[in-house]
Image (cartoon, rainbow, N blue to C red; front, side):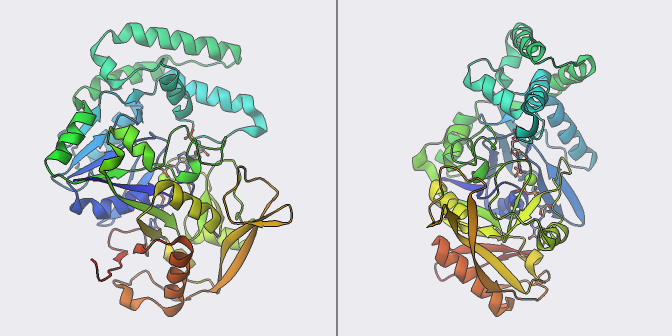
Length: 424
Ligand code: GDP
Ligand code: IMO
Ligand code: MG
């Protein structure tokens, strides 16, 4: 079988965790392929709410294998906290979670470097999650990283060399710190990590495929945060796009099946960087309030705005999206008019192709659509959709040229509507 990929098409927080959980019953294996604890994936079911950072969102459904792939950067300490909190709520994951030996480790000094680099950038800071993601990926690419598999061989020497290198940089940035306590807890967490199955995940995943097992790859962040195609330099440090699944799991492009692209019915962004459709008015505040748009992990207020179809079309193209999933439709339930950005006005010209840079010269060009002004949160089938909502779906499908197969009308697992067509 092939690997289906589910990934974010905007600036992250589209609702990936919820939908991976909903789709999990269809799959044997769920695998994360990039990112790390910068992610915060929320799942709600049976009146409980869980936030996952490094652990795949298939972990709650019995009999499924969950894999942390080689493309992920793993902080043992945050991982331990996450796994222990799941165990405390009755979900022991030790038997069900496999970790790639090739996944890179986030060291305590990576977190410090993240903070030091941000401080040195002043007002130009990226607004990272502070989890050491950039420095850990930097070490990977510059061939200085430590991998999970290194735990088994000469780890202390490798750790000491990396720490010394990091400390030299921290001194040059005049960054003062004391990591004695953090480091001690980090080493305890390393021991904890050893109780999990540390595997050659590329072999394991390809064997699963040969055995006709179905695999769902769970993206983190979103396409507009991709290090190559996102709003650089205000991006994360990994390839969040579909291609990242090939490098982050060791899967051939020929073995990619469906590409599920997930987006909010509007748009949000957390951290710094350009966001052409951002709203600074009451409407923006209303989206934030109705959508509870605060970071799952950091609690930071998310910036809110209308849907941006220039960026979304670009994301669909880069990822080869075959099916779309629209989230948080219910947040627009009370709006009289809904706007969608269909082009950018740049230096007096209308542009529909996503440009090299999106900066303050980009003015969104909007079309107005009628709101449905109906509570959709209890709807169970597409037969109940109001006419204006169907018109919004058709408008988006026409613009993006891909069918919207799932619509989410609330945070709970149950508030999910599959749209069937004759082929299904
Ligand atoms: P992820 O990082 O892509 O998994 O998304 P997050 O979990 O960071 O953010 C999505 C937020 O929206 C979470 O608080 C979810 O519980 C919530 N959510 C997901 N789908 C819906 C929906 O259809 N409607 C509403 N109102 N909330 C949703
Ligand atoms: P999920 O998987 C939203 C943003 C940060 C910052 C930039 C770089 O929950 O959708 P980093 O710590 O990665 O170096 O920060 O990327 N960012 C996210 N924004 N959702 C995420 O993950 C994010 N992960 C990173 O806010 O702007
Ligand atoms: Mg999130």
